[in-house]
Image 1 (cartoon, rainbow, N blue to C red):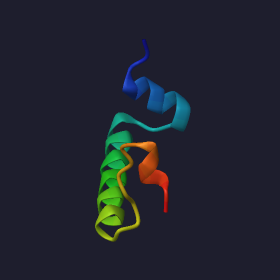
Image 2 (image 1 turned 90 degrees about the vertical axis):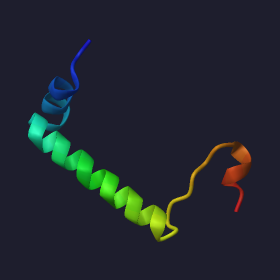
Image 3 (image 1 turned 135 degrees about the vertical axis):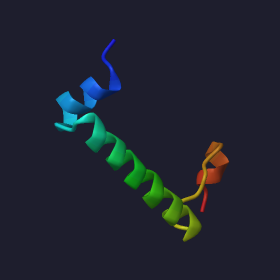
Image 4 (image 1 turned 120 degrees about the vertical axis):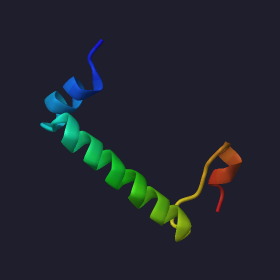
Length: 50
């Protein structure tokens, strides 16, 4: 099985440090979008209805 670091290096050309930095940025962006109401949690198909 391929390690996360190896996967990111192969797939995206990222070092472990760059992958960690990207992950932190994505978590921050996701939290901001949730707080702004732009993302919502989907637990079942009925949650997808407008």
